Amino acid sequence: MRIYIQVALLFFAMLSSSVFASKAPGSDKPRIEPPNWWVGMVHQDLQLMVYADNISACRVSIDYAGVELKETILIDNPDYLFLNIRISDQAKPGKFDIRFMDNKKQKYHYSYELFERESGSANRQGFNSSDVIYLLMPDRFANGDTTNDNIADMKEKANRKNPDGRHGGDLKGIAANLDYFHELGATTLWLNPVLENDMPAYSYHGYAITDFYEVDKRFGSNEDYRELISSAHQKGLKVVKDMVFNHYGTSHWWTDNLPMHDWINEWPEFTRSNYRAGTIMDPYASQSDKDKMLRGWFDTKMADLNQSNPYVANYLIQNSIWWIEYAGLNGIRMDTYPYSDKEFMTRWVKVVQDEYPDFTVLGEAWLNVVPQVAYWQDNDFNPDGFKSHLPYVFGFPLKYAITDAFNEENGWSTGASRLYESLSLDYLYSDPLKTVTFADNHDADRIFSRLGKDIDKFKMAMAFVMTVRGVPQIYYGTELLMTGLEHQGHGFIREDFPGGWADDKANAFVQSGRTEQQNEAYNFLQRLMKWRAGKKVIHTGKTKHYIPEDGIYVFFRYDENESVMIVLNNNQSEKTLKLHRFAESLQDYSSGKDVLQRTQLEKLDQLELKPMSVRVIELK
Image 1 (cartoon, rainbow, N blue to C red):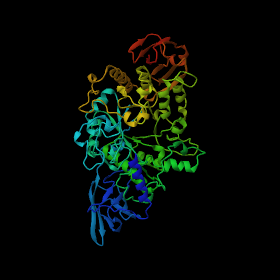
Image 2 (image 1 turned 30 degrees about the horizontal axis):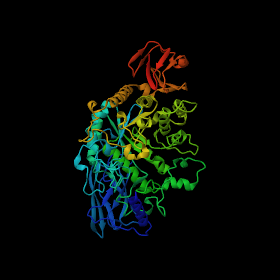
Image 3 (image 1 turned 135 degrees about the horizontal axis):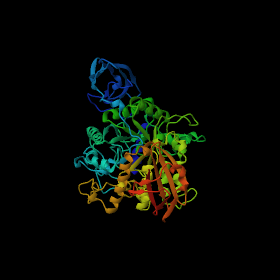
Image 4 (image 1 turned 180 degrees about the vertical axis):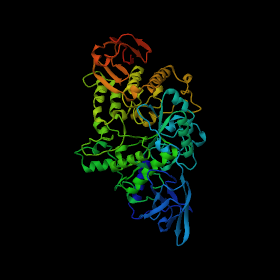
């Protein structure tokens, strides 16, 4: 940790100088981002960031039909300039030179390319409540190419013995196991960030980006990423990219020569965010608390971007559009959503939706109570008038209810009642079907550990996740009962998937490589997920639930054609459940089929419930 504090202090010392400390490296070609673009986009205006030694002294020209250089913008740093160009409907795919002249002599040039959009690009389909998301960490899933474990000019080398080090997982490892996801029943892959994180240490997680346009070489190349997504699509899998707008890694090439002093949020000395996202909507919050939340750094090694700077805003918006178009993405999961300027985030979502109406944007608003999370989902009833346009949010409050409910004594507001009480607040969401439901993720205790390694409790939690409203998400290895507690260190909740490395003792990608208990968990989840895939009533049906009594929670998913009854016995003893109480939900049905036990129910008068068990019953 000490090295990052030193880096941060040096970083702030550099920023406090009245001049920009270093110059761009000499080259006959400037760095331009975005590095290319496409014709036929809805938004025709593009802002290019240009970086080269004393580039501001140059006169810029572009001569290409349908492309107009509208404005050359000079800023305080002479090594940067911004070009506002318009790409009209008449522009054709092709290359054109951007010329940089100094005293009638060409100092730099850049061959910029406009590509043809792939067929159907604007109409790409995002994920929705019919999908099941599988979250994985590329460094910890599978090592498909050992030659990229260590890259000579990159700072951190592989060390699989270090829980917080790089372990060598990569994109080819994921691509080699696409059949595994399909066989399990997952329909959408969410990969933690894959962009370059060339940091001295603790860089495997991907959230300290050092190049917004390059995949980390230890994961593979940009083309490897695009090929992975194409292969996933051929298998019927969608892919979600994890993006970060709030911060970037302090080893980014910007660090030694920032475009502008307000490119980031700077303080007289290192100041960490207070992580109190609730201050943003708190009517009584002090401005100083809000400022610390929004402008404080997420960590010593993560510089806080200033999205209120219009050039930063344009840069980030265009970067996300570039990746959607280049890689063929189906969705974006945006990290630390409330930590960025909320008006900027609203603009970003609207631009993405304009270009891709059916694309899915999911925001991580990690807040503990439903009203705070619901604030960030697109709605018309926020008291302050804020409208986010963000369609999907994570259901963090329900996650906490899941992890507590099966460990507690059943009471007025504890045990099974936690699930009931959390769902009863769904009226605060503009669309509960657009909440992502989960029991664990890469930042939290693994659910099997959280439930005391009790497989019966595990089954109850997973059945609830797969049948309740919203989009279910599981974390890699959950199906294998992987363990780990967050307070012991993130490395222990992000252990390697067994079988992802050639020298692993067990290969959990195949049945023979899993233990008996792992196969029990895997088969349980697989059955649920495969069943769920064909159940529209679970995807989009309504919910009716009944106040838990005697530790038994019952809810129904139903529509005009079908109904499913879910029963959770949150007791350590057998129970007999009389069904007359649920007459309003059962009146049109006389029998049922238990999805998990694969048995028929000839009458709907009572159910025999095993201790700590779940029943999922299709009503007939």
